Image (tube, rainbow over all chains, first blue to last red; front, side):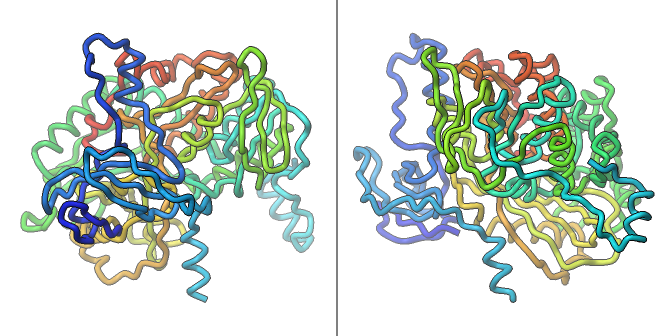
Length: 113
Length: 417
């Protein structure tokens, strides 16, 4: 279970209090009725689904109820930072993204011996 | 390839089992192939097999970054069924189920397909209405699916608690008798052996790091950790890593990669005769031939490639299992693991040509890809060989996210499947 820092409450809370809310910094086109089908599909369906650092929205649904943004490493699931909604995309240090997959099965088996 | 048979077993028994051959060869990669399949799971190995068998294309390589069948093929709960709601889904899953029925004979490899019946529990009025709609749609389409009362469900699966005061009381169930399970490793190994026998190269521990394009934008091959390998056509069958591989060719696909967990118990004597799933409380359970209870849980809510997941997810599933089957309350769980599922917005798969010439993709099978393995592989081979989708997979194109012709199984089943 993830431990998530809410930038509004300024507390670390368990994932149970939060709801994931998709990729962050996606702006709804202001002329949504006029854009082409391709542009709409791009806005509505296509996502980066990054392996490594990803920017995403979370909502502190069982706390303050507010949306905020987070930078997280999708390989280690480690949060690099959380920041308030409305702020621009925050740069993260290059320390991020170890490209090493965590093999839980082998690790558990090794410990059991 | 030496055929497996009862005579082969007898012969080897007399010879001290010294005559068995490796099931597939591990050749050095050639400098180029007609077709490269990226991803050595069931879908990829199967596609290579059907390319060779059905379309006469033998100059094929399957590139796998780890070991074959070590991804989602080896991590799922092996449930097989075809009782989906929409015709596009029924077409492909029923095609697959029919192939499952003859797969062991076709591959000369025992995949242990066991049509023991898949029973889906209904807990409330919404479930009941939804399942009966599925049953009616399936029967009109020639697919078996039937409604059971709680008493009939109990008769089919005696460990089930059907008392009115149960925490997750049931008001009926939908049963597909032809549904069941198969041995997941055997599917990967069986396809690998049969494909290798037809000349397909199975190249493990080889990770694709880039896709090279020619002057006209068409694919010309892949960069790997073992160097460049040329290809006239490339089929991507990389499950949870499909977004990553497709990005190498500059193609974005509408996928979210989420962890999905499963776990097995200590081995028990035969006690559980069928597969039971409850979408409402996220519990999926069957018993393997080794005796372990095989239990599937729900997905985590966030994107991840970590092949692990939150403890609260499996806790929730075990809570439901213990309520539905009180006799399992003191059973110990032995192993737990996660796989990375590739989920599309409408929870239906993508099998499609792409904006890049000669690059094809088979992804988005999400939480239910194992059951589709033979059908998906067969139709993907057709797509690669002919350059256009087979009739049975014609609705699964990438284009549907532009046209809006979605196959909304997520809403139909009220859950990932």
